Image (cartoon, rainbow, N blue to C red; front, side, top):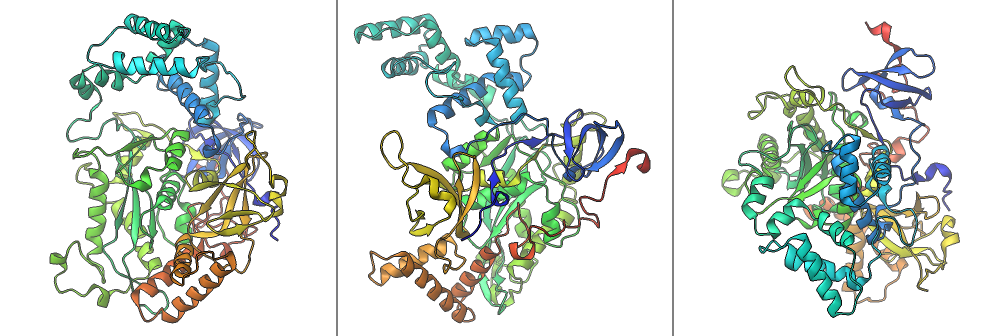
Amino acid sequence: MEDNSKESMIPLNREQVDFSVGASVIHIPSGKNYKIKRQIDFSYIECQCSETGRLMVLPILSLSKSNNSLQVSYPDLNSIEPDDWKEAERRYNLILPLLNGEISGRKEIDEYAKNKGIGRATLYRWFGVYKATRSVSSLIPKQRGWREGNSRLTFEQDKIIHDVIQEYYLSPQRLSQHEIFNQIKIVCSQRNLTRPTKNSIRKRILSLSAKDVLYGRGQPKKAKDKFAPKAGMFPNVLYPLDVIQIDHTPVDLILVDDLNRQPIGRPWVTFAIDVYSRMILGYYLSLDAPSEIAVAMCIAHAVLPKEEWLAAKEITGEWKVWGIPKKIHVDNGPDFRTETLRRACLEYDINLEFRPVKVPNYGGHIERLVGTFMKETHKLKGTTFSNIQERKEYDSEKYACLTFDEAEAWILKQIVSVYHKEIHSTLNMSPTSKWRDGIYGTDYEIGCGLPHVPANPKTVMLDFMPFEERTIQNTGVTWDGVRYFDFILAPYIGLRGEDGKARKYIFRRDPRDISIIYFLNPDTKNYIPIPVANQNLPSTSLWQLRASKKRLKERGLKDYNEHQIIETLIEMEKIVDNAAAQTKKMRRMRQRSKIHQKNVTPVQPIEKQKRPENEAPIKVDGLLDTDFIQPFEDIQ
């Protein structure tokens, strides 16, 4: 059985490395602490050693969070109780004016705290914790029972307040707060309930958003003027990463398989674009239809540095883009409306916004990007063009010649060497120049500074991955009929909760490779990879597993077991291999399986078997990440 040592554990760490002037960082190769003095470019930063006072120029990617940072225990996002999420969101909304700089100064903050019914010290404490972690989950209550800021109201009292506010306060009659107090008093008296205090009712009213209040109180024009986007522009986009857009599209190109160079159909690509600069932040190419995992991989790729990714794909050029966006704008597809995505975005302080119906200025940037890329694919052999009329008598499958890897290399070169460099018609400059100006500023505008980098990339990817809650039995844990086991699960076998029912635990997985799932250890708050119990199971994706079950059902087997599933998977794999050169569907299945088995992610861009953990760091532009540590005076 696989040995799950400490090295295999994935700690939950949502800290971000701050590159702003004055921030403290640690240089990973030397272990020394530094203070940032000057941002030079997207590759190097001038720092001052805390021990010697000497100025040094260090590679950005060799820096991490300082050891002096606040130590926080991060929970899994889907293990947090709904009431705790609500409380964390309430606290976050209360400190938001401080974070945005809308209120400042002790007197103004004291007045604000008083109006909100909370202590100034409490407000400062929440503000400090969030500033140190940039994590909404750090604001969840730390102990059970009644907590400061929570409601002591009964369920009946709470419901009365909610119903009266909805019916009388959020109405065109626009009743005053005093009239709302009286109405709640009357309803409680009629039901023989103790009336809530005015302060409790006032807190609930003050927690309403200004937009909801205006619409609810019959002032839609005022709400629209204040909050609706203006024609021809996307609202509130002042800097890079203010708003990004994500969408999927089938690529107008027929691919061929690696083995026989026979057609296997069109791939799907998911793009993330920065609205301010039009820079492409990330992408995800796949032979699978759009899904939750495509969104997760694209977001992870967008927020992380790209140096190792380009090196793994053997692409020359620069793609100096990373950072957590403030807002992600998407369409209304089901893959964007998952609870996992909602919570992950909330945790990273990302506003997940869905495209309004029939509002043309929303979504235009990503659509134009897709159009630009598809137009370029029409120059390639095997293109399907945009429609039948345009394709006419062109035989796309006959001329198809690019494999999946070759198509991905073409897309990367198009991003790095063409799209980012060309003058954008709307910007009147290249996306690269616009990104640089937004970060570092110009003679006329102040830049926003280098974005933060996630301290633990694996945590980012896991946060956006699909999850399930499962019980642990003496045979391990079962998910979709497949059993997983490791002795690390032994202490949790058969445990029951306070309600007497079997306790459930959080597990996550990558649907492209279900031979491993990730167990959230409730004690250490680390993710631990748990292998499939039956090692005869071939490297399998979720879609292959479902196809296997479907095949068993077609044979009339309803109560099939794990061994039958594995036998069917192996049998299907042989069928696909034998038929790979005969039908396009089989060739596509074979190629898709091959891609999944590589297990390439934005966190690990090289196949596992090709890059052991003890292998030396990858060279980027001829340098190792441990090579570049120069005294400041040496580069003058």
